[in-house]
Image (tube, helix red, strand yellow):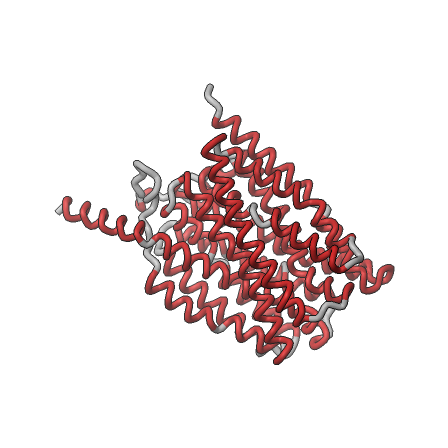
Amino acid sequence: MASISVQSLETADEKALRRRGLTLFLLTVVYFFSFMDRYILSILLELIKADLKVSDFQLGLLSGFAFAIFYAGLGIPVAWLADRRSRRDIIVVALTIWSAMTALCGFAQNYTQLLLCRIGVGIGEAGASPPSHSMIADLYPPDKRTSAMAIYATGVVLGGGLGTMIGGAIASAYGWRWAMMAVGLPGILLAVIVRLFVIEPRRGLSDPGHVHDKANMPTMRQGFSALLGTPAAIHLIMAVTVTSLIGYATGSFTLSYFQRSFGVSVLTISLVYAPVVALIGGVTGVIGGRLADAAARRWGMHAQAWLVAVFKLCALPFGLTIFLGTSLPVVIAAFMLNTVFASSYLGPSFSLIQGLAPIRMRAVWAAITMLVINLIGLGLGPTMTGVISDLLRPSFGEESLRYALLTMASLTPWAIFHFWRAGVLMKRTAAPG
């Protein structure tokens, strides 16, 4: 009987590894849909502002804190569940919920209804990333994990870019409500595909010698304690959090900035700007992941954190030029060059955190990371930008958004410090003696 059980386990492992490329692809598409449903709002903000007569603070709340408090808060219990139950099925349920709620945004007749629907989107999206991170870590060994995470992370730029393109084109022709429905409904079909074709891998499948013990799982408190006792992980989370604070702030309002300060139309942004940025971000994100894996093989895992710090340092002058420039061609060029360097941090960062996490705590560590990132980054980034813009409006008029975004972009050196410090601590821990 024991030999039959072992044989069955080996067969399941082989099947999971044989399909890991398909699983990674589908998880990336799910992440793509997550960011498409999340970021479609950025191209629609000016249309919603005019239709519902709301302030920049209210727009920031839609993009930020009202969404993030549920998205981040529910990530912890979802991750606890993901370390004990089928991660694939959790993703399927979550995808169905947020897709339906995105479509329902199109039926909102006032700000309160739209806010409640956005909260529903946040509740659904809480079930996407922690289970996905955990599955990818089980399917790919440490020397290939960053490249896999980098492919997964392309969902951010592809989802944001193509969501902008699709949403902008539909909104220009039919209005913002139809755009919401058009990007939301296909996610329900994707949920069916994920349920049919994604294979749930064994915990620790790609970590030699690990045996998953369901009967002796660590508690949530132990997960927090283990993370707080790992200084390198704390610096990595701080680095990604500050980067996300900047990224969500600028990602939510930059398209409005183009419209207000340069008069760029929604259709132009959706058909020209969005696909180019999605392509650049997707390609450079994958390349960044491969470079990070190569750096780790040559110098050690700490080199990945330092490589990201270098990328962020290269992106800094271009990021500031976006909001300091007065010539649209210069600003667009700076935006694209910033995207080249700034899109490479997610894959290495998520991979490093998963590498530092105890195997039985991977989903929990991913959820803690997402909790901090999203409460501070997603929650405060857009909301703070809206508040600053409203405060500066009496002095700068329509240009107030420019200076609010410049304020957020100026925080980049803070993130660079934490990436550098994480690398120092990882090298020190790995050093012999």
